[in-house]
Amino acid sequence: MLQCRNAGQVIGSSGWSRGEKGGGTAGRAVFRPLVRWRTAKLTGASMPSPSTTCPRVCPGACPCDSGKPLDACCGRYHAGEVAPTPESLMRSRYSAFVLHLTDYLLTSWHPETRPASLTADDTTHWLRLQVVSSGEQGDEGWVTFRATFREGHHYGVLEEASRFRREAGHWRYLDGQPAVSRLKPGRNDACLCGSGRKFKRCCALG
Image 1 (cartoon, one colour):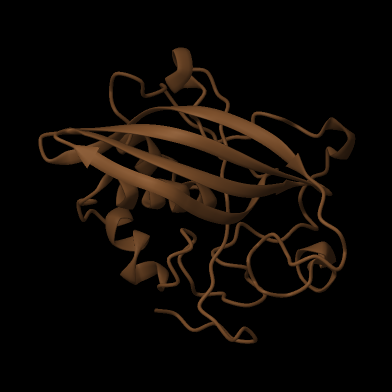
Image 2 (spheres, rainbow, N blue to C red):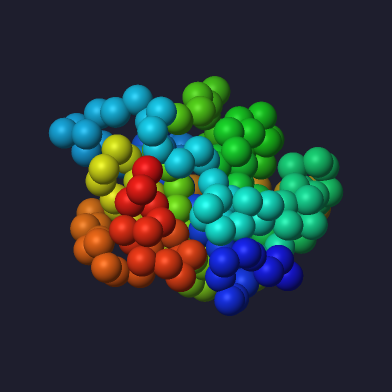
């Protein structure tokens, strides 16, 4: 586990989202926000870079919120190791979206629902991933998760029940049922990234 500086606990963060075309529900599963806060159409230059756990606290952590270093977690699957479970694949895909690894995202997508191409989204900054539940039965798997994100000065959370299918020993993302809600953190609230700091002393600083 990765012990992060300035935080007396193992922590993690980052998020993701969806909304591209590519065929039915699965087409919406490209991880881009379903809801754009059009009143804050910023370039993102002043926002935190796509983070693992909050980069102010834990710069070497895996984006998937496992508390492990990237190369000991999702980085293994990005490098070619087979993800053994639907949850490990989902986490690796989440990290790939944070890190803009579009080739991995396409490779890990089931061919029945895979889009023709993916474009990295620089306007969304992922803050935290929380896996609610996961499981598998035979060659069918599922993961339910919550992912918190930031666009400009606005925040939201994506909640999704994702489906996975295993073929030839490899799990692939199939499709999901997404829902996005807006969040409005107070300055003295705990930061949405999970750093343990107050919002005003963490991600609110930009």
